[in-house]
Image (cartoon, rainbow, N blue to C red; front, side, top):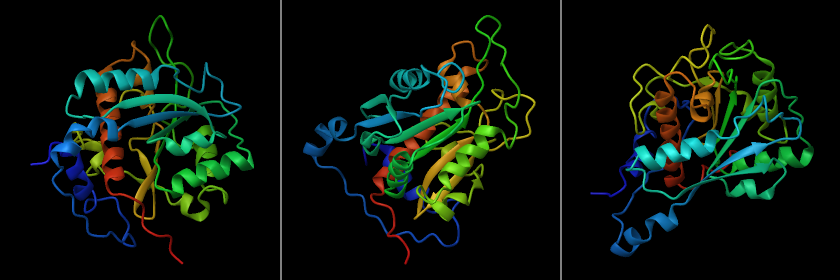
Length: 272
C-alpha cells in the first residue's frame, strides 16, 4: 500500500467531473516507493505556497498578510497525513522565482491590476508549465466586531473579478485559453481531496452575495487557475472569522489537490 494516499488522487481526479471533452489524459503507473525513497520523501516533496505581490495592491485592503502562514500552521497541526515539507513566501510578480512555486496565491479588492509585459510573461510561463494559481476577491473584517467591511463580497463581476480574469486571458498569459472559466462542480476533488465538502465550498465568508460556486480554468489537461468570490482567505488569515475551521479545511484540500496534480507530471503537449 502506498504510504501517501494523496498520490492516488492523481488517478481519481483524472476521470472525475469538471473536465472538458477535449481533455486527453495519458495512462499513469505509480510504483510502490522503495525504502530509500520513503526515507527521503519529506525532502523530495517540499511544497511552497507563494503569495503574488503586484505593484498597486494595498496590503491593508487587497491582501491578508498572515493568511498563508496560518493555513500552513493548520496543515501542520491538523492534517497529519499530508506528509510534505510546506513552506511559504511572498514574491513580486516579476520575480523569476515564482516558477519554483507549487501554488501561487493572489488576492485583491480595490486594487488596480496592471501587470507589466515582463510580469505577464512570467505568470504565463508558470501557468503554461502546469502551475496552479488561486485568485480571490477578498473582504476584511472590523478588528473589534469581526463584521466584514465593504460591499460586494460574494457578488459576481466585482472590479477585481473582472481584472483578474482579464489578466489571465491576456495574450501574454494564456490568451484565449485563459477565458474559458467553468464552475467547479460539487463532485470535483477540490471538495474531497482530504476533507469532504458535499455541498461545495464553505459559505459564510461572503454573506448575502449571489455567488455560490468557485470557478476554475483548465489548460492542457490541468487545472491552472481557481478563482473565488467567496472570501475564503478570510478564514485563513483572520482569527475572528466566523466558522473559521471549514475555510481552513478547504485550504488543505487545495494543497492536496495541487500535490496530486504535481504527481501527474508535466502537462499535456500544446496542441498544434
